[in-house]
Image (tube, rainbow, N blue to C red; front, side):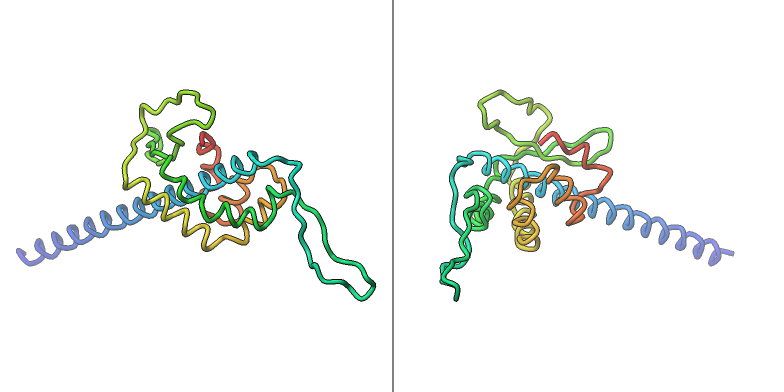
Length: 189
């Protein structure tokens, strides 16, 4: 009798431990996805802003400078802001911008979002529920660097042409870094 109760007790305890582990693992995975999604959306925001700061009239010549057999060259002019060289330059520096972001926790969903700490135009921002610490900065920077390393070609492809909804298309549909259902709630970047 005593052994049967002990066996049942051990099964219940084992099940509870398994359930706690499973729930914690799911929460950790979701938090990891929150960071990756936030880093991707911040990366897109920073790249779009940097591109917008370049004079749209500034052009760069691309193509081959070799002379073809018919005497022509395969050179074309493209906007500098969206040239591959400029985009590669921006990708080298963009993850350093993650130091300008803080973390907010949405109390209704318990999901983390990331907000720029200082505005680019000097306007004051509501940062009352935003936390800033080295943990947030280093997590975002690491996630950003990983995204750039693994998705550099996709990022250049999206930004070499003017495209609408890059955050949604790149971060959710193309790379699956963000939940499709949550993309609307993250647009406060």
